[in-house]
Length: 112
Length: 112
Image (cartoon, rainbow over all chains, first blue to last red; front, side, top):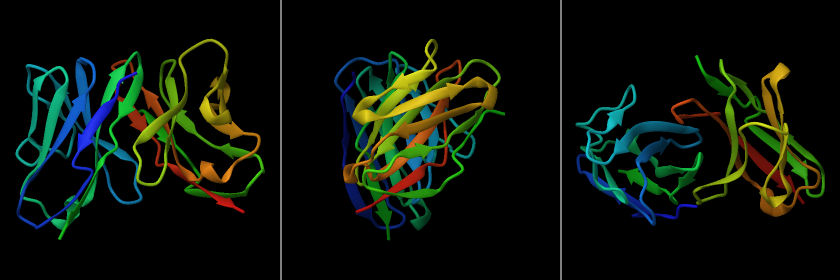
C-alpha cells in the first residue's frame, strides 16, 4: 500500500494570494490525482498528473488557476492561484496502486 | 453517462444496531466498485472493493458489501455499529481508465 504525506494540513489565506500544496508518496507511482472536496460535498477530480507530461484537467478546472507540477514519480504539487472564498475546500492528493486509491490526509483551505 | 447514487444524505442508527448504506451505479461494463470511509478531519480509507468473483465482499472494521448486478447496487452493511463508525461513507466506481466516479456520500450518525 502507498503512504501519502500531504502538507500543509490546513491553512487560512487571504484572497488574491496563492497556496501550493505538496504531496509526497513513499513509492513510485505513475499517476497522481488531485481532488477538491467542497464543504459537505463529495470529491471532484481536478486533474491527473503524470510524470514528464502536462497534467490533464477535468472540465471546469484550468491550468492557470490550478497549476500542477510532477517533477518525479513520488512527488507532486498543486497550486491554488489568485484565491477567492469560493476556493475554500479540502484538497486531496491520491494515487492508485493495484487498483486501490490511496489518499493523503487532505489540506483544509480557508480563504478570507 | 457513468454515475453513482447514494440516496441517503445522512443516516442515524443506534449503537449496536445493524446498518445498511445504499449505493446504486450506472456503468455499461462490469464495474470496479469501492466503499471508502472519511472520519472527521481525516483522509479517505478503503473499506472494501469488488472487482469480480464472489458478490459478497468482506472489508475492514466488520463491514461487508454485496454486488447485485440486476439491481446495479453495491450496498454496504454492518451487523452492529459502534460509536467509532460515525463518519462519512463514499461509494465509488472506477472505469476502465481507473478514473473514480464518486457518490455524494452518506453521513452516518450514531445514537448512544
